[in-house]
Length: 115
Length: 214
Image (spheres, rainbow over the protein chains, first blue to last red):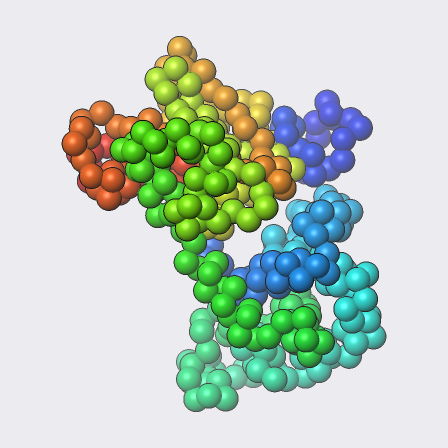
């Protein structure tokens, strides 16, 4: 977490010029579930359910803690979901019921993703 | 132990892909639920999602390298690229969609480097998905303030006489760096030249490979 208060008045995501450590060199291969999140964003926005600005709004409103504690595509699925609920594509009740069903299928992603 | 990772097979009888065989996280659980709801509601299909992932996997820095090598060898294309990079790259089959693409030429006097301070905007049509460091706080915050220090961390040290220009991407505008053509490559074909063009050289955090290294 940066202690640099030089740029007061900007929101957390507007981080150009603030103090930070060395550039991290770690790289990971994108896993299937991450690619699916990316694909869902592109498909849902291409169908007009929300825009990249909607994606960004939720990501930015999630705040700095989310940036530090969640991975990139974890934040994306949270935002995609929020936008789809706001667009009326499905309800929070439908989501909750489906997430319960998904978890009941098994303990791993592979099991839970096999309907 | 709930199950044995080595012997565990999916309902199809095949082993799970390695990244499927980890404990389910809350956000993965949400991804599965959202995906299934979108399919049930008729927003998309499983096949469309797979097609989208295949298209994503097919986009990689070799596309950008082909654009750079052509700019090095085809003066008319270079002119078109400088004028309207969205149109010029679309003609090569690398459609950036409704976004605007700007090509930035490196010269001996000027080096360009690209960042997205606000998020992770990147010319995916030419380079694929951005590397993790591009999305990191450190790269996003420091590149606009101390680009030479950032470049040094990538192993790039430029003469003081070279101007470093930093370009901040937006959701609607993306940049690709056209690195300077390496010396000693006179007469090379575009295909051979493309092999010298690295991903980082098109972000501005690297330089093309030396012709000796080919």
